[in-house]
Every structure is written in structure tokens, then in C-alpha cells.
Image (cartoon, rainbow, N blue to C red; front, side, top):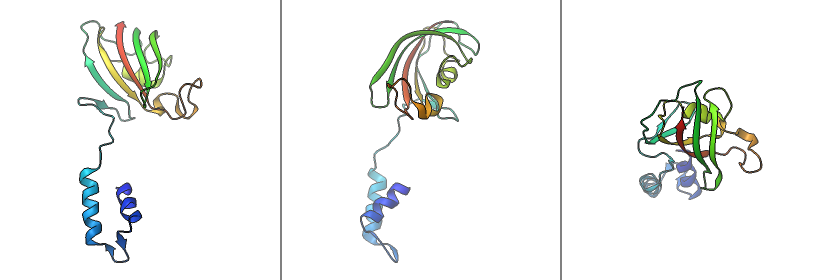
Length: 149
């Protein structure tokens, strides 16, 4: 890990001959007790492009597929927990009417189902951000419920 190497170097534990015994002990402690930095929840799946999906509850109605018109209820939060939007919206899945993270994260849901989507900036608003509310390069976290297909 680069962070570990920097931490060891910053503490002066690497000499000309390499890592000292004390440095090795500190390195092992840093590795063992370093906090996890994952935003994933148990059971969450991650797509190749970084979209994280967790089915909170599976619905019992019709399944949403690409090109279906759906209606969802949602709450959107920034990574720090700030709610930036909530409400309901209707759109056609996979047609670019919403951010890419939704076009990829809604298919497979059943009516009545609830899903968490953790959407990387590249599948949201990217470096531009949006409307002065969503900063550039922001990860977006959504709680979504599928109301109809």
C-alpha cells in the first residue's frame, strides 16, 4: 500500500538499509489496525464501472427492464449524508433520461422493491456537478423504491 509506505517514510522508519525492526513493527500495526474504507454493505454487488447495488427488499410485482417506463420514489444523498433531492419520477430505462447510474441500477428491480444505489461520479454528473447542489466528482447515494412498470 502506498499510504502505508508514506506513513513509514514520514515517521523516519526507513533508513538507507531499508526498514528497521521498529519500522517493521509499526508497519505491521498499521496494516493490522488500519480502518476499513469501504462504503459497501454486506450483500452489495459492484459493477465493472463502479456502480454499487444492494437490494434492501425484493418487490413482488413486475420486473423492470431496459426500455420499460418506470416510476420510482427516491431520496438522494451526498457521501457525507446531505440530502440533495427526494421525490418521485417517471422515465424510460436505458434511454438517457436520467443519470447512467439509474439506467444501470434500476433494471431487475420488481415493483414494490427497494434498492440502494451508490453511484460513482462517472455515472452521475462527473466533473461538472449539478445545479450548485451536487459538487464536481461527487459520489451519489440513492434509496430507490420501484412504484410501477
